[in-house]
Figure 1 (cartoon, helix red, strand yellow):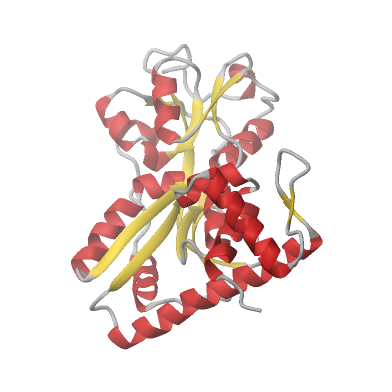
Figure 2 (tube, one colour):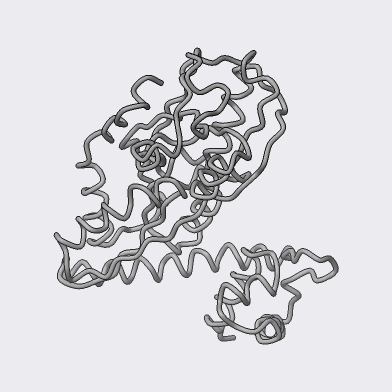
Length: 307
């Protein structure tokens, strides 16, 4: 019996995406084509791999076992490529780096620019998503190395702290708390907040910090990503906790202000992350070395210093 690796790759995406349509979008295929390839894989193995009885696709016991082996097969293929690239060093190759939304937006572009200067023969790419998305990409082998806010809670990943940052409380200029001095939970009672989507590390910090301040279940607007969050605050949809590095330009331009807080805002670690059993390519190792070289991110200018 010969196992068709192309069909196995499609099947693995169906399981990871929990649906044929989602897998089809990920693979740039039609949904009927994805379904047909999985069906042919089932026919070749003479087992049912996917439970199609509910809206969300789930693997059968046989499918779950096959998916585990499939992950190992494709991870081994990545390692084979990495081993071959060891022979060519850093003259040619490809680098795909993952980044959690804030880190991927405000840190990785500059790092990749420096990386390209050092290694112009390496084709480099960045994939940005919230922490839950990046964790899945690392586990599936879509990316070999990632830089994320916080420390992923996944035993198959190795995390190395490299930087620190803190959260700041932002508001539009002229907000009722702008210029009133340090604020606390009592002053924040009744305020509307802009919160990040669930699955992001920023949202975890937002929820935890507000609870510590005694602000429980506040009225809020939920948005995806730091850029939408900042624009929502500027549009006066609420105030928000956000990374200090996400608002440098807005503070300089005066389109946002930092509200000093009586209780300190939370500092969080920025981690360099990889899968523990992955053999890294020379390109990935060189990127990790570059990240380790970075000094602490600089302090914010002007208004943020009073926070």
